[in-house]
Structure formats: C-alpha cells, structure tokens
Image (cartoon, rainbow, N blue to C red; front, top):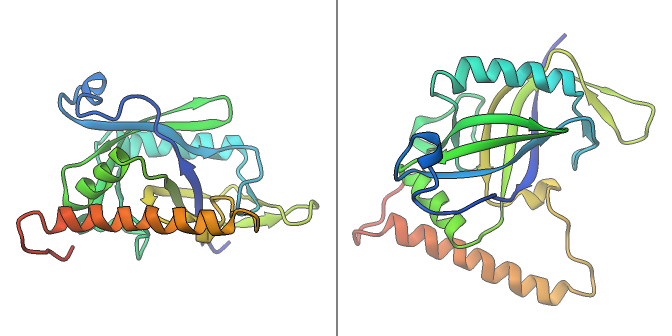
Length: 210
C-alpha cells in the first residue's frame, strides 16, 4: 500500500514558566523548554482525521527509541519543504513525550539557533503558535461523513512549529460580528511577529538570510 504525506496542526499552548531556567528539570541548566499537547488520539481532529491510540502509541515508542533517546528528535520552524529535517532551519529538539489520557504531551527544548531564537522570542511575546506533526501513511474513510481513520502503516517523522496554522484549519476563524476587531488584532499580531524576526536577524545591524 502506497503512503502519502499526512500533516496535522493544532494550537500549542505552553505549560509552565517561559524562562531560561525552565530546562533545569531536564538537566539543561539555562535551557529554554516548553511543554504542551503535541497530538491527540481517538478523536476527530481539525482535518477530519482520527488517529487510533494503539497506532500512535506504537509510533511514539519508535520515535522515543530512534530519535528522542538518541538526542536527535529535531524539528524546524515553519513548514519544512520535505520529510527530511533541514539542519539549516532547526529550531528545537523534543526531549520527552508522555500520555495523559488521549493527549500526547511533550517537552521541547528551544535551541539557540537562528530559527530557535526567533521561536523563543515569539513564545516570550505571547504569540499563539501551532504544533504540527508530519508522517507517512494511508487513511480510510469511515461511515461517518467527513471522517477518515489513519491506518496501521502510519510512520511519524517529526514535529515542528508553525506561525500560521489557521490556513489549515487549526484555529477557529472569527465570526462576522467580530471581523473588524479581529482583523485589527490579526494585523497587530503579525506585525509583532515580523518585528521580532527582524530584530533577531538584524541584531548586529546586518540582516541575515536563513
């Protein structure tokens, strides 16, 4: 059976203190670590897919052994162009994953790379980001209209942070009543994002392309 690229998006809400000392609990003094929900099993997600928990549990165990335990569970900032992690754009490393009922939670170290610095400042500024999982597999349409189930051959590849997952249905769109207010908030939000990125890339007075 041929595999297709399966990408999921959901809002990532950090839990705990967003400080440079947040990595101490993971043996990384001075490291910046965020925690939150990475994926959810057994429920229809924003893309109309359902991940059976046994499949996700199996893939999480494999990901733990092949990537996290070997300290190479790297991810990128924004949408990668391929299934291979591009080291030039690495922003974080997954330190730990665990289950809380049907929620797959994780602790993620934000690295001191150019992309990691951008990600760190976005978190500090309170910008709402999305977490995205990327994998290969197949889906099967269920009887419920608009619902497909991820099948046995699914393979988890990586998790990455995205700046605008709303285009993929991860965030609810504003209602018509609040459109003008939310449009202004949306513009202000992304102006703030652009200012943060510019200040980091041009911190020495010379802008860099990454």
